[in-house]
Amino acid sequence: MVKLAPSILSANFAALLEDVLEVEKAGAEYLHVDVMDGHFVPNLTIGPPVVRALRPASSMCFDVHLMIEHPEFYVEQFISAGADLITVHAESSGHLHRTLSLIREKGALAGVALNPATSHVVIEYILPLVDLVLLMTVNPGFGGQKFIPGMLPKIKAVRKMLDDSGSGAELQVDGGINLDTARAVTEAGATILVAGSAVFGGGDIASAVQKLKHAAAGGWAR
Ligand code: DX5
Ligand code: ZN
Image 1 (cartoon, rainbow, N blue to C red):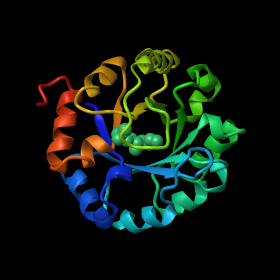
Image 2: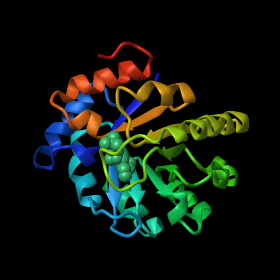
Image 3: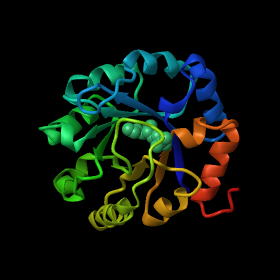
Image 4: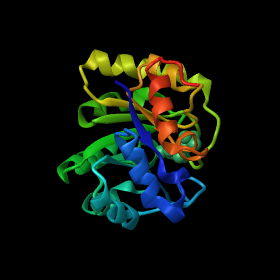
């Protein structure tokens, strides 16, 4: 069963709690929190106080995607604010092995993310340290971008890598996931779909969540 991780980047920040409660009620398993620092990516978003404020209201898995330089400096703050899963970029962590070990040591699940241009071979030696691999299917920084179809072979390659190594890590895809792309990424082997604008960008949030899950599972979604 494919799981859904709505990204609050596209939610209504003036009514954030309502949006979060609505996706949870509709069946989303993860809450994807996009953290950007204006350096690693050309945009600024939110930090630990937002995670801390939402935490008591929800039992979804709080999935924090750090698009920042020096993610190791902020791991503890996000975990103490209530993050269940912390994902760091291979490109921003000079000592990826150490950062992933730190995340687990401090009590959270550890994820590694790869930008579109980064080959999956860079994660070969740290696979035993990860609970999730996140493949970016757009260049990170903004919601509402178009899915890069050239990422499908990479999703398949990572699926094979995880299976061959006996890793039980989740395979998450992020960027441009909607009713047109959800099935292809699932067929390629993704187990968690991040979706921002496809969930929060239209009118009915609950129906968007259900339709996306249905489409991902191969059903008719329109
Ligand atoms: C992009 C973020 C994504 C983004 C997804 O930098 O990591 O999580 O919010 O948004 P959509 O689903 O609109 O592409
Ligand atoms: Zn993200």
